Image (cartoon, rainbow, N blue to C red; front, side, top):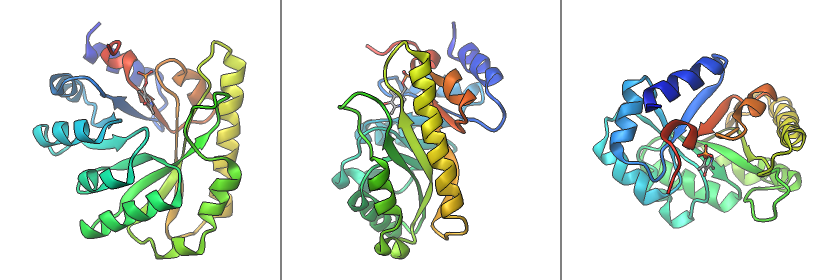
Length: 222
Ligand SMILES: *Cc1c(COP(=O)(O)O)cnc(C)c1O
């Protein structure tokens, strides 16, 4: 299967309201160009240096998404161009993104990453930490970030009921936030990033608005 046919197949399965982010980590720039030729413009990377290198040699019309752990001291490298950061899980990181966005005279979109899986190792906040962040008084001065929503990764399991339940819980939390913070100038709650190669059909059924698909588009990573 070619990258083009994989993209066409997955796009045909997704409702028009769900954005496909092609996770291109470890894959060469040529693969990204091939995807772009097939009409794919949103790409995700999990390593800052890799994203910066690819962004520099690819057309400026692409939209870059940061997924996975982001160290505070590396925000400055992606701040000039990054479209959406999916992995914010504390206020200090949000402040640094705001500071670097301000330096670049832009506003950077972010998602708050929630811990929804059974695995201990997965990154992300619990509900208490989420509301502490959203209700922090200091948030009001962060005019160079826009909170677009939430992101979460389900447990890596064959148990589809468990995966569905985790995604359903995240969707309910997202809807609750959307209602609670309606009209807030720095929050929009229009994006719920959930679903990857192994579970995106379940995520879409449970109300995802953005899926992050890597290996099903580009093939396995070595
Ligand atoms: C690698 C990665 C993906 C894509 O994983 P696939 O299983 O290859 O689709 C999605 N989200 C995050 C956060 C990732 O690190």
